[in-house]
Every structure is written in C-alpha cells, then in structure tokens.
Amino acid sequence: MIHLIIGGARSGKSSFALQQANQRAAVLGYHKQFVATATPFDAEMQARIERHQQERGADWSLAEVPLQLAEHLVTANAGSVLLIDCLTLWLNNRLYLWPDADFEQLSDPLLSALASCPADVLLIANEVGLGVIPMGEETRRFVDYAGWLNQAVARLADQVTLVSAGLPLVLKPMAHQ
Image (cartoon, rainbow, N blue to C red):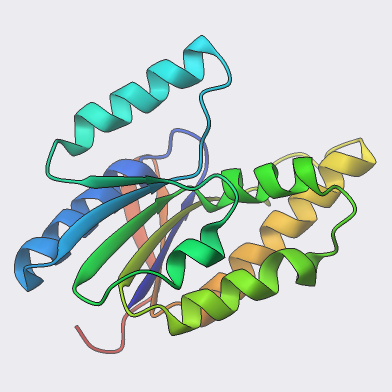
C-alpha cells in the first residue's frame, strides 16, 4: 500500500499522515518506522525535528535517510508502516549534491523501490505547483522536478490525499481497504 499525502507548507499534512500511519499500524498490528529526510542545518530546523519527534511518540523507530531513500525502501519488511517525511526534502537534498542529475536519474530508482517495497508506505510531499513561478533557473528546475515526482508517485500510489488548512481531500481513493 502506497499513500501519497501532499499539501502546502503548514497545511496539516504531517499531522494527517501521522494519524493515518498510527491507525493503519494499530489495525494491522504493524511496526511503525518514521523515515526522516530532513537534516538539522540550523536551530529552527532542529526545533522542528524535535517537535515532530514529540508528536509521534516513543513507539516509532527512526531511520534518518536524507539521501538513500530507494536503498532504504528495498530493505523494508512486510508488516511495517513507513512514514516518509518528506519526499520534497529528499529531492532537495539530492539536487543539492547532484545538481546536474536529470529527472530520471533521481526518480527511477525511487519509483522502482516504491513499487517493490513490501511495507506499507505513506509519503509526505509538498505541493509546489500552486505558487508563484520561481525566477531563477535552479528553483524553476526544483519546482519542475518536485511536480513531476509528485505526479509519478501519485500514479504509482494506491491512494493520494491533498491536505489544505488541516482538511484532507482524497484525490485518488484506495480501491480496497
């Protein structure tokens, strides 16, 4: 099961994803793993990470995966729920280190790993296509890649939910529950 949860900044997508992952794990008796892609590069980000840790509680294992997300997914176990927060930060991290990588180089390994992952996966991503078109070439490229990645994951996903103002809107319902 793959569930993509998208939304803008401070839309409530992380809280919604956490609730969904907790419910799924409780119903199915699954192990819960939080897959963090953020790195604490300043005091504000460190505080944000700590707040997220407190919100999810101690019954979650943690994998810090700022770059090797595809590699992590192929090692996941059935009977687990993985909550990946967030796909957009992972893309940013990859583009920062490999600015000349084309979209397929970045996305294909991840999409293949997602398609074969035996765990239930909830992915959080930012919806970046609703704002102002960026002025710089690098930021336009990032927005293009993020939009294309969201589209590719949405095609692969069993369910897609947009969260805005804390309210979930199912864009792609799960065929079976």
